Length: 93
Image (cartoon, rainbow, N blue to C red; front, side, top):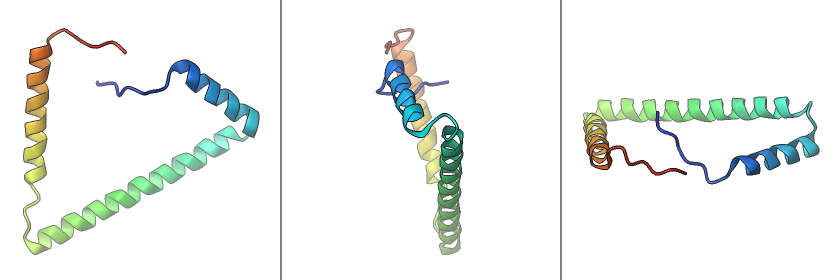
């Protein structure tokens, strides 16, 4: 599993959470998080619908859409090559 580096530290996240509790109160935070989750789900569903419509339209027009699999395979090969070169050397954040 690869970890995506964040550009904020744990102390900064704790400070942001403290400010959120002070501004909204502890009882409103779950409600806000639930609303954000629903919004993110709606955006994800809409983007998936758009992707599927584009895919269907491309297939109707006879456009080959399998090139993304080839690109993904090449990206995976490059990642493996980089992992072989770097070996056990890892950068610590």
